[in-house]
Amino acid sequence: MKGLFARDWAALAQVFAFLDEFAAAHRLDEPVRYTVALAVEELFTNMIKYHGDGAPEIPLHAEVVDGAVRIVLEDHDVERFDITEVPARDIDKPAPQRRSGGLGIHLVREMMDDFRYEYKDRCGTITIVKRLE
Amino acid sequence: MFEITKTEEGKIELTGRFDASQVARAQEVFDTVKGTCVIDCSNLEYISSAGLGILLATYKRLHADGDTLRLQNMRKLVRDVFRYSRMDTIFEVE
Image (cartoon, rainbow over all chains, first blue to last red; front, side, top):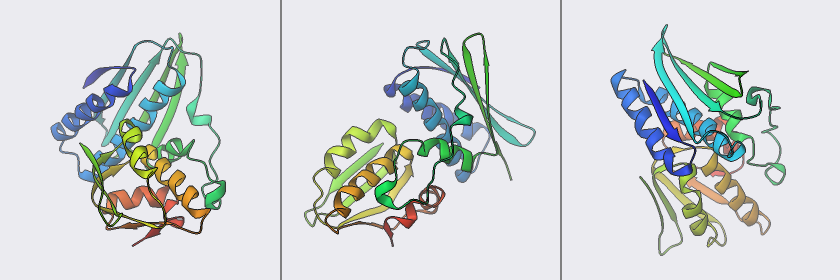
């Protein structure tokens, strides 16, 4: 399945609807649905926050291949920013020293089985993979 | 769909999907919290880092006065997000 979504907070509901349709078509169980939706939300909203001047729409591809869910998000007309190289957060710090920034990327790393970034022709492509049990 | 309700007793009830598009709405309610607050999560189906960020900021504000957030009745998948983020070591989770 392929979807095309406005680089806008208001598009998040449409992204979730797209993922719900994809999950229903492939009969994905609830834990997989949840973790995939969370990872896509974190990556999509990062593109809105940090690449607001990129292309107005963000293509999203979803498929089940080789026993895994594979999601690809394309961030067109942006500078290179390898999100997979963002340093790990120290999530064991006491509460007063914790920040919420970077927490989303931490969750993507924890919950996905693969998390990759490629950059070519001013397009950052993020691929996440969640294996099906 | 996301709903946030503050009861007469001061308890906060979260319902549905607490995602990044709901931050402003949730912030308005959490900004009114004073003292230790119970949050009923029995109908909370989803939370992402955006929701966790609101809870963390509220906790920090309350903690300065010795108060806390007490989260009740979390579903397993929501609880997993707290566990992966180690937020379960900050809040009181019942």
